[in-house]
Length: 439
Image 1 (cartoon, rainbow, N blue to C red):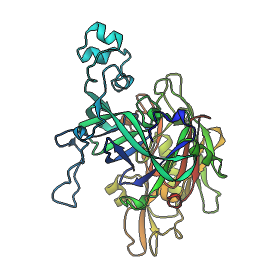
Image 2 (image 1 turned 180 degrees about the vertical axis):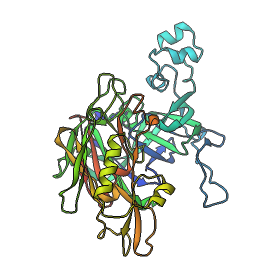
Image 3 (image 1 turned 120 degrees about the vertical axis):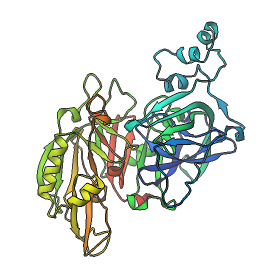
Image 4 (image 1 turned 60 degrees about the vertical axis):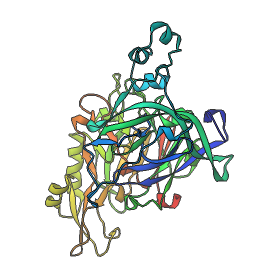
């Protein structure tokens, strides 16, 4: 079954398995004819979908190696010559204009060497020029745009089992080299290039339910990514809380929400400390497009700006009934680590660390599962385990000081929380749950 655009087919929902990885969540992409399969990060903070690609080995600077073996495993490469449906994207395509971030739609064809009559008529046959695409933290990829079929799994009229659904002409990056990007990425932003945009799902919505970090690198346990009406219908479940989606005129491709404050809760749900009120820059986006909280599955930990973050750390130190482990703080780089009594892992029954509750825009309140806030960084030793807060400070490099989002909600804090991006109603929904039960 071949579909050009899901908006023409109201009976179609896409359901794909997602696996936990060491610092994010992976989606399988089936590209080409016959399909070549790649594991890529699911990233709501970017648009471009890309895979390592070409006839030579993939070059990745500052990516590190797997020290469990003397020789690093070669990165799987997409081979365009092995796909009968592969073509180069042309310089006049809207995707080429988008990947080059050009305000002038003629720029890519001019760079490709087309003459004036050819590119003004839209008939220049030259390929899209090579591009660079940047991410936070100094990461970037270099490549060219290609077109090919992408095959996903769809539910037709809600009938099981799932059926393969082929989308021809999907535009993606054929990347030969990068800095700090060891594998590919599926861009789930709101821009022209993103996967849900090209497949027609930005007129509907999508959802994910990320597995707990304990399932990292376990390919046998998955949870669903859902695109289409089925994702929105699941939001009718009791217990979902919704917060309005904010818009930025400067960064319109991101998913923003507002944060009013953060409170700490005891085991009985009572306040363990007074709510730390967020600055106005986190509850709204200003006229220049700056502020708000970016919902970014491509960032591992939640980042908050000072002095708000410092206030939260101070409240946590006062509310936690345990001794701090300053040596583990120094070794791990996390800002608060505590020595928690524990007879046997996972030590949930003995844990008296306060739960963290996010007060979101529109009166929504999301209390994070404890394992989405703290993580054991040591094994149990002498009936003690050290758990660290997995939030981080928003640095200048995170765009908080120079414009852009005021804070980032990372994927670690979204584990065991079903998240619905309702693009019809312009809202984001959250429901804490055991995502392993959604497998």
